Amino acid sequence: MKTPTPIPDPHLDYAALSRQIKRWGQELGFQQTGITDTRLDDDETFLLQWLACGYHGRMDYMERHGTLRSRPAELVPGTVRVISVRMDYWPGDARDADAVLQDDTLAYLSRYALGRDYHKVIRKRLQQLANKIESLAGPFGYRAFTDSAPVLEKALAQKAGLGWIGKHTNLINEQAGSWFFIGELYTNLPLEIDQPGENHCGSCRSCIDACPTHAIIAPYKLDARLCISYLTIELRDAIPEQLRALIGNRVYGCDDCQLVCPWNRFSGPSDESDFNTRQGLDASELVQLFSWGESEFEENTRGSAIHRIGYECWLRNIAVGLGNAPTTPAVVAALRERQSHPSDLVQEHVEWALQQHAE
Image 1 (spheres, rainbow, N blue to C red):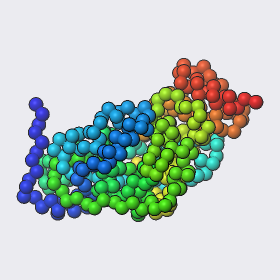
Image 2: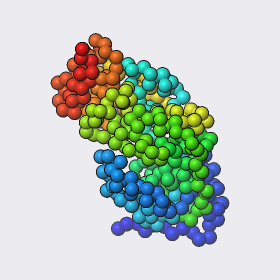
Image 3: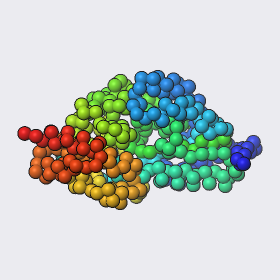
Image 4: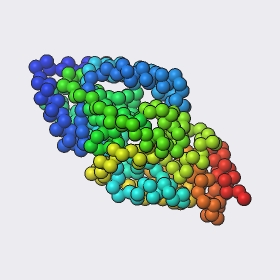
């Protein structure tokens, strides 16, 4: 039998509790904590239109979950407030991102994925925050999320005052740029809400112009089917051939739109050691990564976000990177070693890559 959700104490000072939650958030390593209600009417309209256009590609789960994503109280009954948090992740020990992107022999991995899996880090801290709230408010209804369920995270974070959704569709903070993760606690506590973030993109279109595949088809509108992050992480099938050359050496995600964003001049390296670079993946050679066997992939990516794409897609992505690399005996030899790989998906991308080096 399901345990009934505890009813909030009507005598609590919820304004004071809201202020205390923000202090606890800072103590737990969140750079900012905000609180909002659950109304997402405009965002729901935008989401449904975006889905109707098919911009989500093969991410069928986005359509399958319907309005659960935009109606928190349907996902978690009783929810009246959302506590939204952000945590900086930029790895200060990583090789300069632009330098890696300009070296076609190296593999570029999105900087958010170089350290420990952020899902684990943030979810643990959110649970600790919930425990602290319970110590003061008594048992209450809540559920923690971080990119792990049908949640409109960026819309909620904007409403909670953590920033605004930029033209590249990432969240931007006026003091911290965009190199941060976000997470949420859905709760039935009637906490005091914050003012939403104001948009400061102005006439800037740096992110739109910088996108290698022109995936930002209009300000604030992304066609995921063209996005390199989608192609190298979410897509499990063949990468469309016409997009492969545009991917360059980006083998896991893409940061270009954030690298050019002028607001990121205010960002700094994360204090979280969990987000420090692991296994030298900030600037590894494509040939070296392509030589990994499946056990090496498992060992070297265990505990990181990279692990979730699996070994087959890892080889697919690196084959594309090698196809875009300078023609050298080492590159050609590495590709030929994989020509007989048991995966048809890997074979297809290896053959394409070899064609790029044919005389």
